[in-house]
Length: 378
Ligand code: CA
Image (cartoon, rainbow, N blue to C red; front, side, top):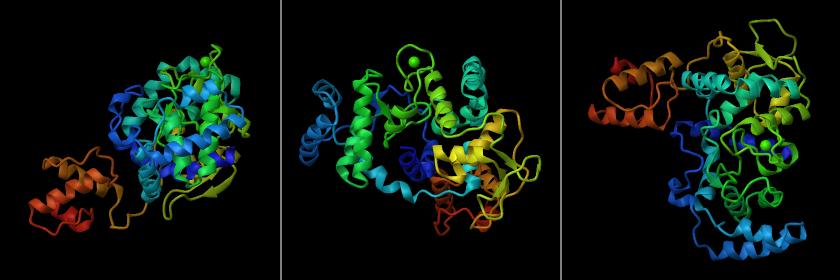
């Protein structure tokens, strides 16, 4: 079960952070779903669902659960499209870290920890997992609850199971989603998540939910979807604890500090080195990526009051450092071009702004941030 989540999240690591540029959308605002994430008529999908009903019944899903769970479910073409395109998104560790620990995210995280201080303290007490690490996972997975996902999980996982790429994996997720409904944990309308079925504040996939989620407030439901993050954060702590988290042990640190023992990793060639402990490997159970685990660890340290990394990253493939890329964004913004957030990450908005600038200047249109562009902007 853990392995399947790891396997999937390796693919998703870049995607989930890459999507952070989109504005927050209320989790329950189903009306705002784009057309390609609303069920579309599809006879082949319907035939697949008929076959699935039999398999689900033989695996213990009741007729009533199938009826209620599948009533509004349908084929979501946007899910297939996102599944096909996600792997193209690649970021450097520096960019990944810039997004994960942006000033806006740090401010939001500090406010979230103040607002839920008693809850995260109680979770740390019960599970022995650092409140800052739990909060950092919350921040990376859903921006502290702002992006819990609003796509119906039954439709998303059914679409992916029908589509066939890793169909057995997705059919297991669909069965798990129906088991969640059968257990009365939530209702079909509230069973929402990302296009890939990752649900709630800390983005549990259905099988991980069944194995690890906990009812922290003892109200009889493991509610990881609602506004109160308590059950979701406790579920994350439970997941880490059951995967071997050692209480009181740091995840690691930037290697320059030299205060802890462990092995050394360097997520990006020429960038900062980190000394990491066995708790770093536990973070990788959540998402099998050094980028992910180091970003969560560093965000946790920042939320605990620590400072930014001391080591430098090398210039990017176009010869620009992060300071240069920020200068590109600032100068473009000062000239009236919309670059999105000024964060040193050259994303689609900044690239579009560069193309607009190049067009306005009568230059060759490349959309590329490089030294020649920076010189011209200055
Ligand atoms: Ca509960």
